[in-house]
Length: 215
Image 1 (cartoon, helix red, strand yellow):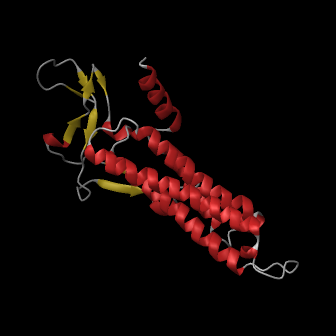
Image 2 (cartoon, rainbow, N blue to C red):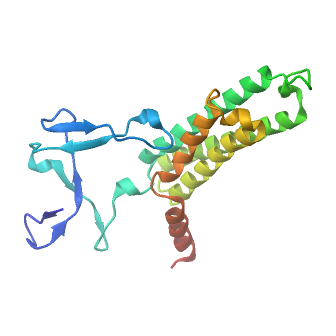
Image 3 (tube, rainbow, N blue to C red):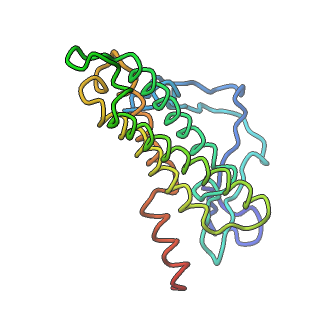
């Protein structure tokens, strides 16, 4: 937050500070200990007397007198996050297929992939991923053509689909899916992190409902 340099000197401003990664005075602290996406290394960054030019301070746009941060709203550029989690769901699908083909219970005497139950679950996993992919690709194509007001709720639907895909795999396999000797527990932890990226589900649904109802 900074004072207005011209115009109204008493009005505080809210914005972002653009800091080059190689600037002097930056240090990283190993604090990332989240449930999932541990490999992202999203650690804390400390800025100590970092010299910056005046144009490094960028004010957030104001709409009707209220700051509307583009970073906290859904735009085509923010769909990298849904794409990441579709990748997590695809990895879980590949692991499910591999495990189902290799797992041969003594009582069954053949791979569990030959059973109708596992085949049905595999179909459900594939359907959820196909839905997420179709929403993502469709949103990007429509977004390139113009304004798409449903971007936020489309992100919600992608998140629901990828979570459902991974949860279906874990639920079908039971205990083997929860052991660290298999990748499923990691995929489940990772995919659940889709919920924390803005806009979060309750915010997106509230905004969509208000837009639809005109209130």
